[in-house]
Length: 324
Ligand code: SF4
Image (cartoon, rainbow, N blue to C red; front, side, top):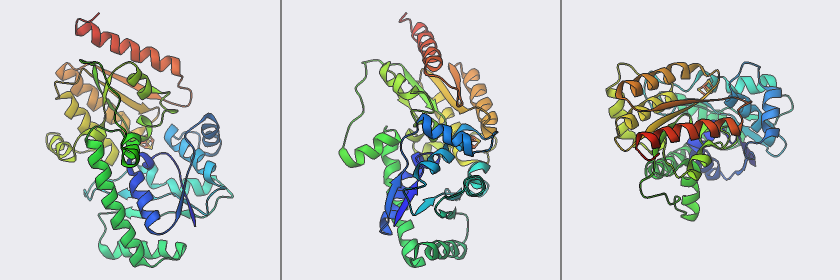
């Protein structure tokens, strides 16, 4: 049985979770191709007009695997942390319905609901429902999910040792290292949602450009979970969304870190949660005198524009250091 997994949204944060889960069930995985102009165009064609670019891209990735899989995995991801008042962005919660309503002729969608705040009975009901679709017992599905969570823990340990998601996965398989840097590199915290930071097409090659400029990059995934929780305690209030909390907490962690020369916040044009996230980070950075720049992405973002802004920001940091 072939399960199609769109290479976007939860893919970068939870890839080992989904892969281990389906492999444990004996399924074959088909991941959509890397984001391209063709995938973006299809996303724009199928998604509602006012959706943010990650949601548009999700539709494009679903289309990309539509005729290569028996089922497409579109999880209804609600909560994976167990924190009582926190869920994923509302657009994640309605994703299955959006795709179902706007994309005809797809294979069946696997809309597995994941909410770790629920009691065991409710989770078992969900395992049974998925079991009916895939022809597996709820016990086997529960076992696969537990193995998957172990794989996710190990993946996160690797991320917190300084590897971005694509590198952490590569290292699991090939033991590749991170690129070498100049002796005293500019260090930037690049904060934003994983589906913006690690998709080279949607961010117009932002991370690659920074690597090529000899910048040391720190990302939210590199901050140990315990440190994020400590930073959360220092905030007057949590936000309601899992990824947004991770971005704010990690940004504040890096603002407090004397190794960091500046903060880049990468956001999607029209993102509701980021209207708060961006303001919080900007205010904190200003108060502590840490240089900050906002990069907003949409379907019209071009490489030249991104490069100019990055070069200007890095030049300003070099000037502050007395290197220019
Ligand atoms: S958090 Fe923002 S960018 Fe991400 S899916 Fe929600 S609205 Fe879109």
